[in-house]
Image 1 (cartoon, rainbow, N blue to C red):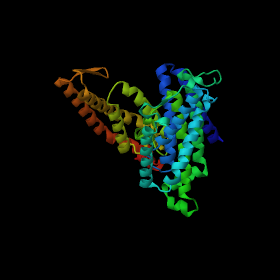
Image 2 (cartoon, helix red, strand yellow):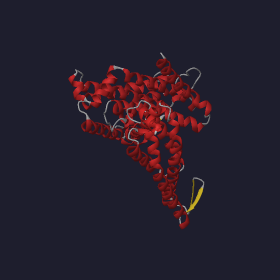
Image 3 (cartoon, one colour):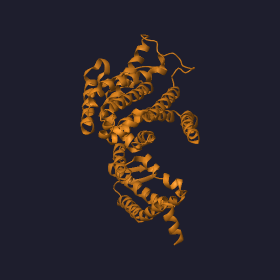
Image 4 (cartoon, rainbow, N blue to C red):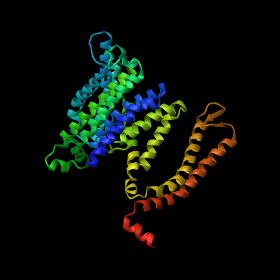
Length: 415
């Protein structure tokens, strides 16, 4: 009973956060960021259904996102010319149905295989559709793309969708519903068997389940929710191009899911928030945004293979045993010099890329021709790396003590 109450409390808190965000951060820029986060959360969670839950590495997931968005924006165009009378609130559903149909077609042959073969098929489908978007200009609009207008639809509860805030509250509904249904899918027999097929398809076949049909069901469900995200994108931006269904968008959603934490339901949500903030904030301050994104991905693979969600879950044992406070000081002693190293390295990269004689970055004024600027940054990076290396053994010992069994801790205290 307590577990059920806690679960309902988490979902209630999730909905409350979504609803209250525009009240806490009431600005045009903040609403724009929140809208992009909403789209990214649904898109990343749909990809997690493929790779995290089903073990299917796809390089063409943007196809279902893009096709859902394109059909949604065409419905907006039909509403503009009064060819159809349709509620704006159902536009993401149009995208979802499009993603489902595309998933049924592509999954009918791609899910016959797994592993590398499936990944290559998904890459081929992605490149085929991306090339088609430049050929069939009547539907995709070519390089110019297709635009619509969301304000021609009938008002909904007094909202005419002229402002991004109206779009955000509609997106909240679809994000919450999509998140809930994707979570419920993980609790169904099909969702649980997707995990079994991911880990051991031969054993799943042995007990009577068809690995191909389990993959097909997961594939279609993932395509559906990717299409919902595409419909939300069409509502928010009222404009789609070939970029929305090419390899770049597929790679971006892969980064979201992996950095956040594959296999953890909350992982893609974390990854979507991180990458959206990086896109909006870092891109306004530096031209090296994609370089930092690549570095973040490499560091995640090397040091956090289970993503940020996995890193958080690693502390569960220490938290349950009441020893989490013992990690605070070691984390601080390691984190501060690590931060010094990161900031110094970032300044070195920015200074080497700067075209102006003086670089103003992070409150510093650094001259490209000044030996003192270069020497200071190199010294800061070296000092940060040295202190981080020196403090790491202490952090490792604190970690082992925090996660040690009760009997071992008792013996250590007695001695």
